[in-house]
Length: 345
Ligand code: EPU
Image 1 (tube, rainbow, N blue to C red):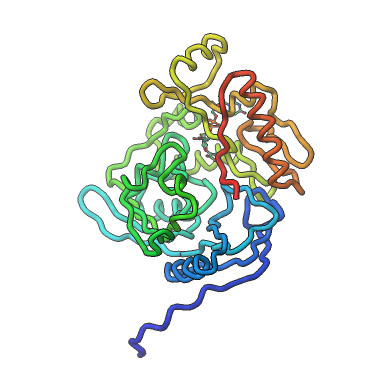
Image 2 (image 1 turned 90 degrees about the vertical axis):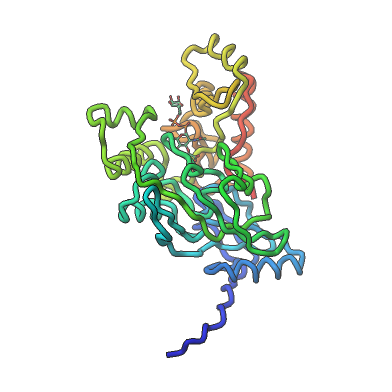
């Protein structure tokens, strides 16, 4: 047996790679230099090289939260670091880790197979484990930030690997230290702490409705219910290109919320930090009559006004044009500014 460690392999480089299948909007896009990243060493190698050559670069995970231009110049790192494992366990919780390239939904499924419930409300969110902390993914009353212990990343500023605690990740609603510092951190591994004590979280309206006659569902039942709701509300990107919610739910001062509520008693909103209220962007857009509308090759999904879709042959420019039109109308009618959620590359 050879006890010597073999030298780490070089990342595979593919020039002019089409990214049409790697972005859920299905936009025609290509990467000038695409590097397949399957180990943390690949990250340091490629980043050192692109920084030396002063090339532009970015990381592409599942491609489910990005708006791609026709050409991505320089280097595109295709994050494919695999693997998940249970690290340790004590009386209260279990620590698990997963590679940045692991598919998110497959990871959630795996945790349930290991009898580690907690992430079932986040089933079927497209994307990768490494992308999850960047926008602090959340759905049906749960945010991933609650379960993150720490993150391992390559810091392009110091050109070294670093570990960030949950506090250092500065997670907020669809936001994080990573999102606020683009082109700095490449997340290679995420460590999660799953409490052993589990409680069903079905207070979110859509889920509460599903379980009105079953107040004590199992994690698997919640998982299946979440999959069912999402499948109905969000189009399958294989059939209609989309990036999930296109706008963030806007957070407004409580005085503005009260004025709006007085004028629109049906206004849908959620509690937020003191003195603030989160409004349902989908409701605001729906009220402006956009649901199901089409503008050339792009449009607004017929079952959910918050989701913009590519009907085929659409481009980043088309989708941003439609987004601008929605932002202006919502601002004119409600005085509320909508922010785009996916990253515009
Ligand atoms: N609504 C309408 N018309 C619409 C859409 C929504 O009137 O066309 C109203 C509904 O009455 C509903 C409310 O708006 O009560 C909120 O809609 P929904 O429950 O569908 O949730 P959301 O606020 O649109 C958020 C997340 C989703 C997440 C769901 C479920 C954001 C931006 N979006 O959507 O996350 O799955 O809650 O928890 O926070 C994503 O970020 O990509 C995403 C899909």
